[in-house]
Length: 484
Image (tube, rainbow, N blue to C red; front, side, top):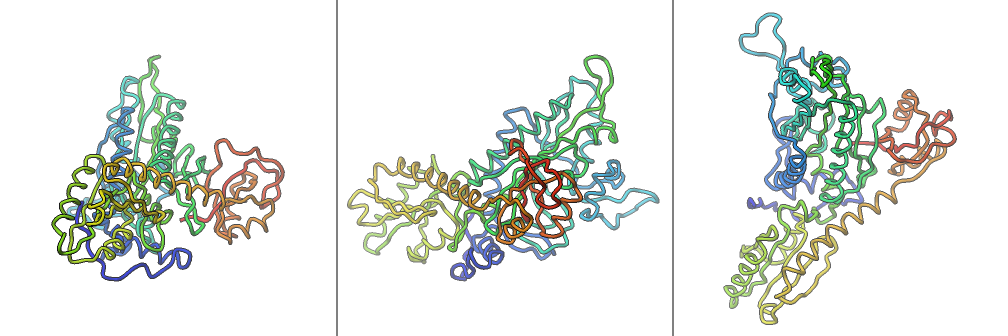
């Protein structure tokens, strides 16, 4: 684990319950997750933040490889003509596409190059060359890469930047049914990632036509609610149908010897997951990290007095060696800072569990364990340390999810009238309400309240009565919220 840079500004100035955006920006920087770059709209991901991304990546990468997905890499540069092949897709990204303005030795009529806003088009040009027969299917590839979208809104570290990191899967299938299965497999994997690793509860469902991925047949999503009442899209999985295989000529000869267009999916999540972790679990002392993705799960703090310094340090090192095979452990040996200062720093970094060891503990053959999420202290027998540490880390993981789940439940309300709807949105709630299914009505709601339909749940309530906005007959019960 890289050594942390010290921030001499003491504590968090802003409160989570007060100025939430400033609080968020403050803990992201002071905890060493990221910083603003000298390039407008961009960020620097610092080693601690990148270590969290590596843990997320490691888990997801291992899971998709279990089902035959493989990693590949495609160019950052995309010819403009490729983007234009799928008109709906291109128009959906037009405001965000960054083009290289000038190339050396550009010939007349030669394509401009875009910096990838997403990789469907550059990847599918290759797929059209690689796929010839049903025997070549399914093709299950994933790419870990950076993305460039020329955002014009205010920069929010991890949440809204012009460049960010993500994974994007691109699969090709014989039939629509196979593509449907892939979409749901990945969406459920995203849900598992969010809830079991990040300890963030999500709702799942389909996006509306207005909100779906440009060029997709349909889009599914996992959505989380942040403490400021805004929804955060945590991952999306799309069935692209044959909307890209036809313009890119991705065809195969099937078992019946007939030539057919392939069915495709794409899916992805990004480094905004790190922002979600900070927002959902952080407090007024800094980060609170779920143990399963924490770069450092346990920090050992020696309580040193000069006459017993060597003995305490030796015991601390012994504990580190005992634990390091099963946990990610840091032993803070620095003697230029007091134990209290170290407590505050490691709390800022969100380390889930702290072990305190001093001369009195050594004499009594004990150690003190302190949870980051609750501050609970527990004195345990020295020979029970590993077992108790494991139990306490699991308790932290479960408690963080339980708290976040309670917040989501308490912050989700139903509205029957548009007045109730508007009041709930102003009170930073997620609103469950009837909707007529008309995209124009959906757009009117967005214009009037800034709230959008996050998902149409897969197994939601059956719509009865009238649309919350236009009073037409309801077709769906959906979730609304303002969004990042």
